[in-house]
Image 1: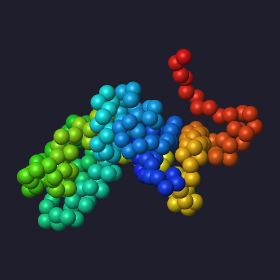
Image 2 (image 1 turned 30 degrees about the horizontal axis):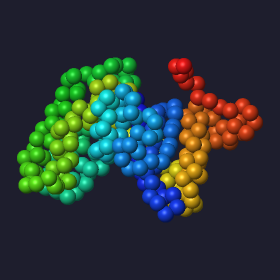
Image 3 (image 1 turned 120 degrees about the horizontal axis):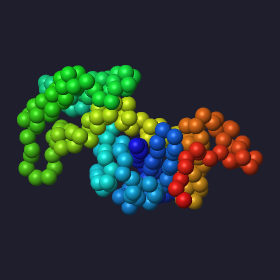
Image 4 (image 1 turned 45 degrees about the vertical axis):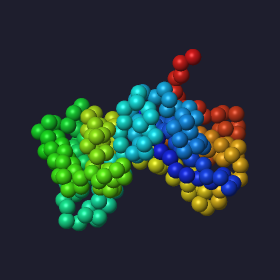
Length: 246
């Protein structure tokens, strides 16, 4: 399972794409163009065949060999915005409730050592999810042309990618509901840029992201930043306990 996320940053006068690919034990940060090739240049995604956890950025559809989990936190925010835009309509709250309750059931199933949410518990929330989408689609028919309303776009994504929205409930405790792991990896880098300003060169930015990847990976294995840096400078470099094929 791999978390991926992206945001914009500046290097000198140019805007770059800051991207991350990470797991619960490893972090890799890098710069690239905002494109499928830019994501490929990170060197992880082209051959990945596991579950890819991400927001709904369309370029991630360019990895058909992977299975996908769309970030539930992003969907909840979109549903909340839809509820505010359409206060007389109940479908946003119904779908949001169904997703939240399914996540609770997935957590309970994991804690109980189960490999599935009990069907009698899952059924009511799955039915509410799909019925809410059907009602929403009836209230927001397609407009002529390609451009659709935010509500219609959201509802079509929930309908057409239901398997990718609900994958967290397939194997409770294995696939997370949100992409918080990826977002947390990016946050310190964005904070540093806000405080110190943009990087002055691509080489400097790349070196800093390499160091940040190392420190965040070490943190996930219980090392403090100070200890990881000390070991790097005293000839006892920490390396993650990952076996690689020759």
